[in-house]
Amino acid sequence: MGSVSDKIKGSINETVGSAKQAAGKISDSPELEGEGLAQELKGKGQTALGEAKDAVADALDTATTKVQELAKSAKEAIHRATE
Image 1 (cartoon, rainbow, N blue to C red):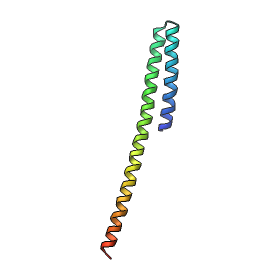
Image 2: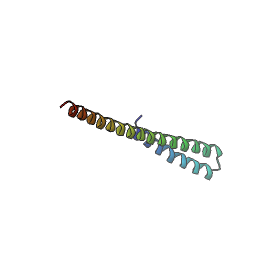
Image 3: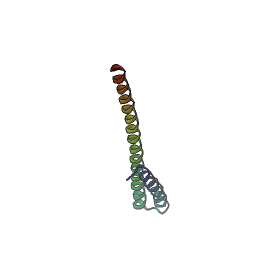
Image 4: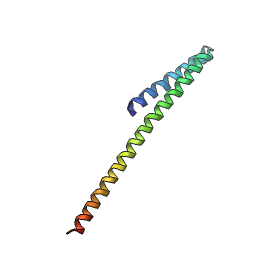
């Protein structure tokens, strides 16, 4: 699953979980309230996973750019040294 998909599903689960908790409180149903809390926590986990995937992708992009810059600099240094 992609990061956007994780974050969307997480947001939906957080919202639905909060609604179930509210409904459980109003209807005096600890089971529904507990189910809502579990769903909300699942959503928070999904959202965090999506954010972590974004962070890893950003870190890999940054690392790739740095490696490419270093390779270019090394190539230019070798070229200058052999002229």
